[in-house]
Length: 302
Ligand SMILES: Nc1ncnc2c1ncn2[C@@H]1O[C@H](COP(=O)(O)OP(=O)(O)O)[C@@H](O)[C@H]1O
Ligand SMILES: CC(=O)N[C@@H](CCC(=O)OP(=O)(O)O)C(=O)O
Image (tube, rainbow, N blue to C red; front, side, top):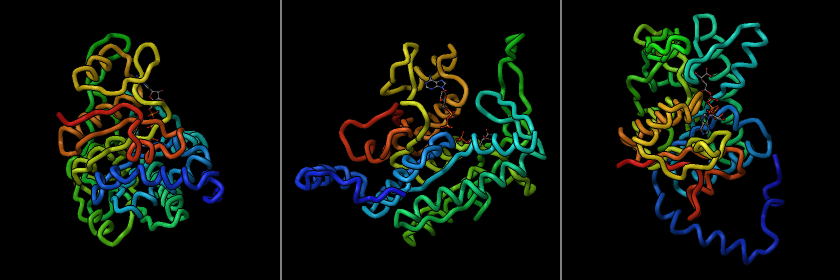
């Protein structure tokens, strides 16, 4: 981990001014709950993941309640490849059979979950790793998804196996942790009616949690600047109509589809706003919350 002192500014006066300029934002978010989705791609680089851990710890220490929901797509793919199991995706969702779901649970709620909690713990806050199966947090059911067949262009229902969608989020375990000064770090795995395990897209899980706790912000950290238009330029704010149009015409594709759909749903169902933003930028969350500039693509409740 980098030495925090080495990251301070040369000029102490300037450093103090920067801290003071955060005051209105600290006041705005005091006591609020912020859900941060930390994508598997954003975890790659040590410098960035250290900065992420410190941002989350800082939020807690200044009186905001962060909840982290992490992904782990690349880490799952690496493990499946080692086991010589092939992955196929439909609209950014991994088709998950019975053998794969065990591996996915092991990667998400095992190694990745502990790594993310550790980043925050090393920054001096107390994070607790759990999965959506703990404390009845995420009850899920099999996701039925319609998709257009690329050859025939006919819409049909796709069987994605053990891919789940949240049906009920019980936030009690989150409130218990937050109330004790702890930071929940959640692996996107859910439990079905008959105790079966579901692989839930981490964006979807983060959105469901953000709605359930009426988060004031859902921050989606990913590996692009935000939603990009046909010229590759960042779209600073996106309405539901515009988002549907961009999905329809193929400008928003792959993993960006569940991300945008999640943000739209989260703001419809209780979150105040969602931002899809660049996790490759150091201290992305602090930039978004504590500066006027903001970053990424904002999706607001109307
Ligand atoms: N219109 C778009 N704007 C930005 N990214 C897009 C767009 N359409 C598709 N993408 C893809 O979505 C990816 C982000 O989704 P994903 O790979 O699932 O991220 P994460 O692992 O962070 O959840 C981007 O890296 C990009 O390749
Ligand atoms: C159903 C589904 O696709 N689940 C995802 C869960 C992890 C995830 O979403 O990770 P990222 O946020 O890093 O993409 C998967 O199997 O990859």
